[in-house]
Image 1 (cartoon, rainbow, N blue to C red):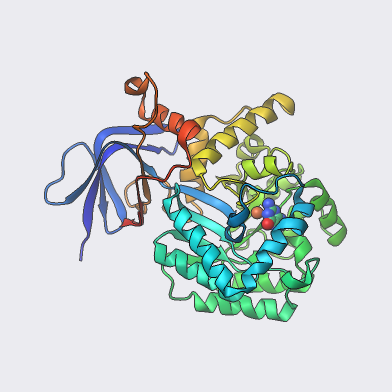
Image 2: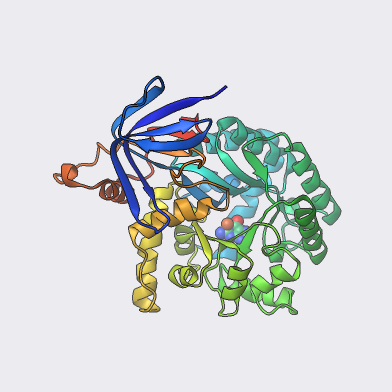
Length: 420
Ligand code: GUN
Ligand code: FE
């Protein structure tokens, strides 16, 4: 049966040329979960959700986050990556062996991400199959969409968070099998990073990915000590990206690499040619003193980019806040490191976090005809300024992102289904 309805309000999205397009007091028509059109005329005979005066925008895409780290988001920011992992991350992730703890913690996570600005995600769970499946089920039931990875770790990890290699492979296959009837939440192959995975495990994961056409996510070039460690672990590779390529884990299937703060000159063409999506995580890269990713240079090299919270390296789940962080750090990069790398503008940051990241998921991230109807509604009326009535829709969105991001959204639709 055909399902058709409309959302009324102030509609805005990014065009292909990266500019904003605004439709004041208009109707976003949705048919069978997809965008039909945007029109000024009130449609006949369909239900209209009235969001007069509110902003209707594409849902934001969080290209990389760690669900099990949400409980300590906003804590433990005084160390760099490798110490932070050992002292805080691994002990917390170890708790997810206990399914009751997982149920409580993932319940909180799911409740909060439903209220957030995020409609799509690619996230890491932990090594634990049962807890990861529980999270997958909670997210599937929530109506949100995206990828979830059971994490693989079989070396350089504490005993309580280390898998036997064969077990890791077996559990990955079983995790994928258990998710075969899911509609919105899909499995993704998730070697934590090179230091946590033996050569045999990396090879097996690559085989699973290629045989079953399952995408891959991992971490790349985040921290200088990490990069040095990878150089020692895979001496035959030319660089860190090449180490993933060496194990056929770079762009054989759709691939997300988180961070990429320190790409070498010879890594740019590799990332571009392999069609890798970089998950730029500006808040995390500041919190863990990792550095500033050269986003402008990666964009100019033609590399796909999405924005990411990297919870709990990043302390907030708000993707609107991430837009402003990305802009702020791009200005520091420009001023302190390379004045040829122009800072990001607000419209570019929004484009990256919606339309550009959306291409990873299909026809997602904008209101073009036939795109998945992933929509959030923002009540911007609380913004306190004498300028309110003079603002364009994009200025209202910009002001809201800088001042008020992180508030629950007013309504949310994913593939046309109301989830909040
Ligand atoms: N590299 C390997 N694991 C992690 C993690 O959990 N967070 C971040 N930020 N980097 C990582
Ligand atoms: Fe991460």
